[in-house]
Image (cartoon, rainbow, N blue to C red):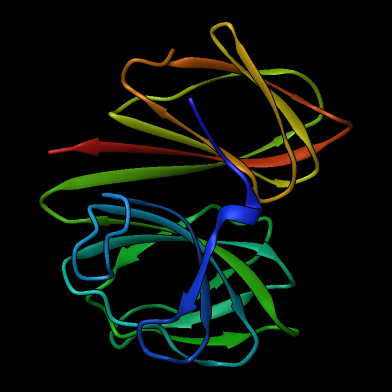
Length: 193
């Protein structure tokens, strides 16, 4: 189990230069936008505008702070995302424009390189202790709202907002999450092939 603390995250410009992303973890370590297999990041969206294009990349976006945004892409229905909606999966090949519904938002973004690996993202709201499971080669649990204790096998850690753990195949596939009051977290599952 690897622990990700907010102080270690890397700030960098968006690929299109229109804002800033906070890279939480990338594989392989140190990979660029053109060479990563998978990537987990957060971004602050303060104004409407285009998303960066990521040809060959599958993305999943979740609003984690703020009221929401609307995504538009030629030939597709408008998609509205907020803190209550399920994570939204889409192709990084698509031209996507965003409009804010009521002020700035923060988002969580998971990306995987198509043909190399794929992912799934689940949003979980906890009011009490919960057993969670993950599958694949990599599992990531991200705490967004609140604080939660996470136990995997014999290891336990307390995670605050935007902190995470990364699990790999030799870690247990089941874990226990115990929120301090209530907590919101995301479970990310990455599989190769």
